[in-house]
Image (cartoon, rainbow, N blue to C red; front, side, top):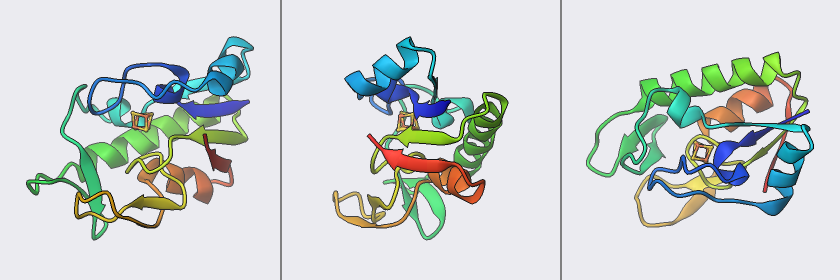
Length: 134
Ligand code: SF4
């Protein structure tokens, strides 16, 4: 079983109210082999919502509003679902402050990438769930 970023499954849960539909991910869900989850919505954040980046271990908007608690709560809730579903692998949306793997935006809101994981990806990695981007 896979846990997958809900936006990759075609759900409009992105910060801007759009999706990142990926046909391969949608097919896994159709086959009952993947469960979609959006950690940011599970953390209580609205859709649409202001875009956030990780700035010195906090998750902030460009104007400095700190949403770290919601991002953390969402990552933990999404991990619960991954465990409940018995997921051993995850396919997550690249570059997101929640779902990004290996590369995330650098916190300057200038589209520059640095090494790092989003909060949910980091939690899955720590729990031994194999993670990859779409
Ligand atoms: Fe997609 Fe993850 Fe962002 Fe939700 S938190 S919109 S699942 S990338």
